[in-house]
Image (cartoon, rainbow, N blue to C red; front, side, top):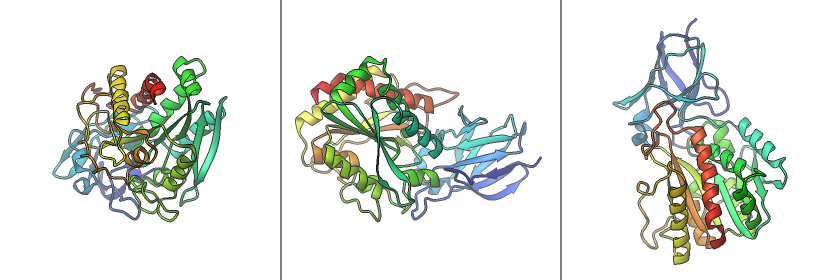
Length: 372
């Protein structure tokens, strides 16, 4: 049987440039309407027991070429268990060398989180006691902006993920956070539900997710640069969420992402906002330190540079929400590479670890919720 590659499915992304026997030259397709690309997801068939060479030729022009050195692609025969593949980056070419055990193998930038799994998650969680569902509006492609609400307390907590659709670890995080929050036997979750009302958007960018984009929506727009002035034409997803935030208020917010280059889990804050208060800053630091104490996968030494006073980019959600509502707001980043502080040579940073991080973040919030 001859080997073949396809990507015409939910979140699929790759283009075959040339094929010769068991060697394929490939290119990642840019997000529609933009120059961003880095996410790939495709299927290899008909290659059981043979070493295959997959060469992604356009790595140097990707959105974050510094994300390739030290990176390993993920492969799976069952689309449940995703392991690290032998991967090399040299002279702008990312080469993946799997030897499939069966005649079908999936290869991805990170463990995918399909729109079908998203719908399963929303259906499962919204059916649980104490959870209500609300559509905040429609995307440009006509998909629902799903929002789950739970809890009866006065503190308003917003959790939202996957503004950048290729950062699939963010929705795996959401699954872990939602499972913990809705566990009737978890004492921290029960206490949080009494203290706060949670508004949770598991996927901020359904269109980009289905289309196989890295960073943008159906219009080619980076949603995390739209929070100052979202519009129905460019960024209805942000407009819908921010309008609902205006109705509820926000005391605590977490925007969940993945970082291509930095091999650690970390948070970024809102230090440069014009409306900064020392109380906000102290609670942000307290949350960060609490999470570092609770989870060996989280650390505070490595991350983004801190903005100077008054220099925050208010087009980004964390800064806009902190400035607009006086909230303790932050961006959580998880790696596409492994976590260098606690590496796993077989699975790397994984869907499972992302879910555990979601649960740990909820546990850390329980420790500070009374101070918000």
